[in-house]
Image (cartoon, rainbow, N blue to C red; front, side):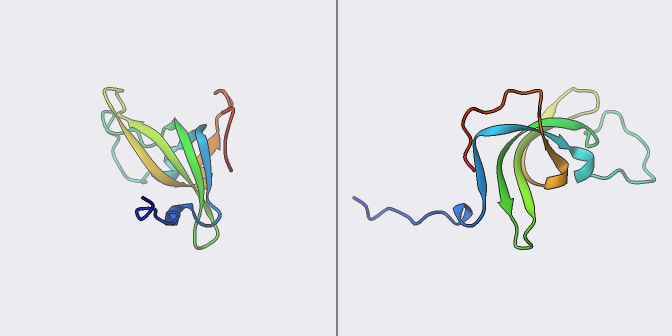
Length: 109
């Protein structure tokens, strides 16, 4: 019965801090995609300069000792015609806590 039990997954080791439920954050896409100096605007393209709402599921410690945020967020087109959902590891300076959303009642560090 228990011969299929596996040890704790490698992503749960170390200093990782998971949030359950995820906590609401703002994602500054311009920190991820700095604006090039010499590019002609394309209003119908993907808006990677926006600040968008997201859900942070964890803080993860890197081998260099830095923290990255594991976040679910959406990127939309400049004309709001469509969007794409992403989950990514983002630098800490691209994420900040949303104060306009209800705080999760139960989170695990």
